[in-house]
Length: 113
Length: 506
Image 1 (spheres, rainbow over the protein chains, first blue to last red):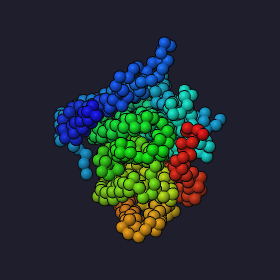
Image 2 (cartoon, each protein chain N blue to C red):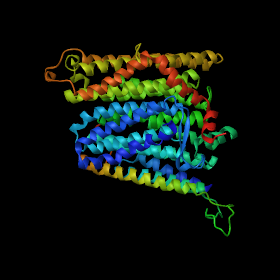
Image 3 (cartoon, helix red, strand yellow):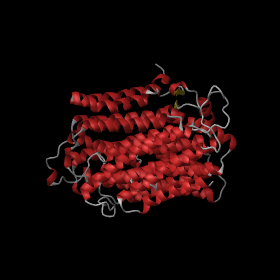
Image 4 (cartoon, chains in turn red, cyan):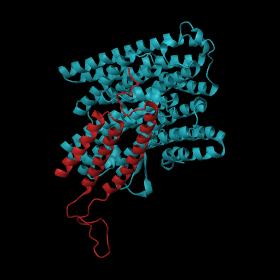
């Protein structure tokens, strides 16, 4: 149970950073924390204590006590998606800095109403 | 050629076109426009082929479900695919002329095609994680498209949209992990089978709340709507039309419908039903109240998108056959008239250089096609008979009243009556708001500054006329549309068991 709670804690810290922080880079870090928390949770879902790798070998064809391999595939996909989002987000931060000369979101507010 | 064979092409054609177009542009620039339109035209033809075709599934790599990822075509998906390809076709045609003022048009088409591929994937897939992946494909393309102008406002809007969109995705994948840990499957039909046999437990309920937050963010339901009024007006006009007309529906509302009807088993009077109705009602009221005070043409339209999606959500939340029918029909109608309105706003902006309603006026003399189509769309969204918006709103109101009469007298019954009354009131406020648009932009005296204004190019006019014809056609021929397109989709959603049988066999 503890790993799950700690995982949720990282998720919550990420959400907090996105909501409360004023600096663009800190918001990016918050989103990264959120993604890592989710990746960690996916790995935890597939974990089995004392499990063995899910590879069937001719000497021992039993599938008993295998860990679940699917979440690992999901995590790989999710990491790649996270990479794409992070790259786009950082690129946007650079362009925003060029335009506004600041990373402070309370000064970047031309849109309202 | 049967429906089963062409199913992967709905994702494959736009995905391939998305990556090939920038390469082709290096060799021959002129060809890109034609190829982009042809690619979307192919999607429209395919979508027309699968309408009315029997439901089928396509097994990727021939892995039998629930082990492999599969594409599922049922009447609901067929309807969504038709909406997506129809609006995309008009938008692509419009972009051919509108986007010439931007540099790097091939990259624009590339992102547009990726967005279409993502949306088609979301509505066709039968696998929850695959749905997440396609959703991100469409969403990342849309973040890039919102920032396409790379000016102050566009970048700010895009960053806000990206952060909130990714937050929504984070909630969704958290929910997917929880559901997977509980049911041990990612296939939605298999998940539905396990949940309908074992019932909802606390973890699944918690996951459904996460899904509601995540997809609610994507669908811009109040209170998750903060990004939409910035992101939709900042994008180039055809992209605003795509975002408001399609993206919030395919990524947000469709996913909510599919999950809550098929996987979590929404029934009238359940908690899910009340929550969805509450979200819908809140979006309707808050969206329209914020819209009435707006003077920026596109921002006003963006707030109306929130309000109109509230209608859809209310219809879905009612959970009765009639309510769901109204919700789905309104989803179809909204994609026609709201994308048309955004295209009209784009034409007005291109010709006059302004989208502030106070600076416009008298455009009906100078821009006859834009004015005529804008009037059609305004009448549709305000719910004036015989245009399409009237029928779908009428069905939702009748469904709310019907729900009131079929429940026992008491607070619940009074609640349904209040819902019906609020729905009528919101429709009235929408009318007020669009009378304002008509009065300030189209009628009245032409300001001196605008005396040289001319109608936009023929291609853009054709795109707008196509959508206007769709608005009138969906209204006048509504009985046929309801019977042929919307009712089968509704029946497919109400019958969760047949979906499970379709995917898992037996």
